[in-house]
Image 1 (cartoon, one colour):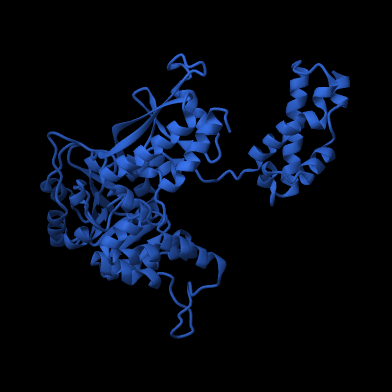
Image 2 (cartoon, rainbow, N blue to C red):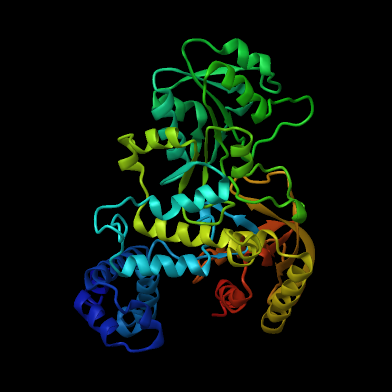
Length: 480
């Protein structure tokens, strides 16, 4: 064993070999800091030492740099990849929380690049030459699109709820229906956020039914506001009742109380024509009397991560002056992306075509069927004998807590591995093994397993990504 250890190449030899290699495979290492590559070389040699101890090598010739180099290069390429990187989303979930939620419109991408590469008038008033407000770049747009008097943007909707409650309700009671005390992704719970804000939760009604009189009986001198919370991807059906926002506003006005509405994923337009009714829009909430409304920028709206707050000017101005605003404010790149996205909404038809989230949500079934057929034909042509490929009907989801009961009809490309001997389907290799192998491809391909097959949903795959899908499958099958 000692003899074998002595024949391992030195770290410098490995580093020099990687630096001298001008092949295609080493291009992935260009621009990678040398200390990181050195760490990877050391990690690789430690791995080989463990293999020697396990008896994996018997001959010194197996441990020369030439013999180990292909493995070293593959190890270094894998380790040098950024931890945060692109993936191919074939799940059919449009607003996929775990994969970055909404994709930005080309106009928003260009605006981010411009803001990142150059100085800007982030907080500089070009008319006066004096300090300005970063919110002025989007406030007028938000007011125009929602009908609100004023607007503010913070870094996400949880932050929006927090700062609204901290500003208006700290140390006093906020009345909320029991049926709206939900927990959404990442353990975000309304009662806990309320506690952090310093507001005191006052639950009313039963889990499934809350009446206007429940709110009225709960109002006291300690009441600061009435709050309505969107239940995200949780729904109750059957013997249920909740009080409409308009009625809550009428009651609150009698007692001089503000009404707060947390719309969650939020939306600036309705989708009834696409078969997606039921999600209230920000403008509807304002029209129904909400004094302050909060919603996300990176879900159904299709912009960057942001928490948008709109409402009465007097309330918004108070929130702007809250010291928390400094900690929760958005940066210049978020601001650039949000402004570019909101500008598209001035023409709803333009927004549906240019904002990827909206385009994917509203894509016609006939278009999805055609794309599925093209992708299936490509995979059959190049992976015949390795995969059984078919097209079947299926459903997609909006995601992000929006439209949880709505199915978006789609066409799925279904894949099942075949035995290399051609002896038919191999139920063990199965689909799960293929799904797992695809997570290690470059770029990773994320799909879903459904009815015994790995399913690719074209709703969330652009046609320009078909070649990447093919390459990922080749890698997963050991052909690439």
